[in-house]
Image (cartoon, rainbow, N blue to C red):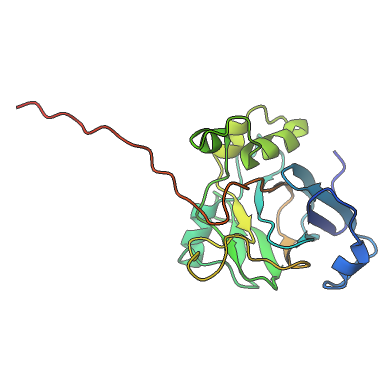
Length: 229
């Protein structure tokens, strides 16, 4: 793998023709930046080096992006971006502010939030996965866990369960404040920019969740435990 030595701009949205200048008018354009469009419902992974940066841009608006990351070398480092450790360091589940760091399961900074016009992200929900859709009768529906596993296959990831074991940073996802605005509330051209603090492989999924307009939490029915008199 060739590690990215310059900035990366990821453009997330449907696999349609996109006028890149119109989107990039909303951000400072870097002529050395590598650009990659992640089609809606699919994933992508790439390596980044300490001292570089990357941006995730929503092309058409309302597109949630699940983001995971592992410190290189993967998988031997056993170190990954951790939402539980980040929540602990930030003293809560509110989205990070510009200047805050996302940390790993070693409680060490991996990314620093450098810019964020949207200000709406989630650090509490898991990546959607095959079981999530199966409970809704949608077996075979694409999922973020599978998208990330597919993208991470060149690095040796062999099962979506490896991705499902890591909670993502859900870019542009508005939970649990659905009473205030929609689940996906980002506008066309909204973006987040991260400064890279550790050499890492980053994996993203343009979330394929398309079941309903509002978020639904499915709670499995659990049979009561019998008591022996």
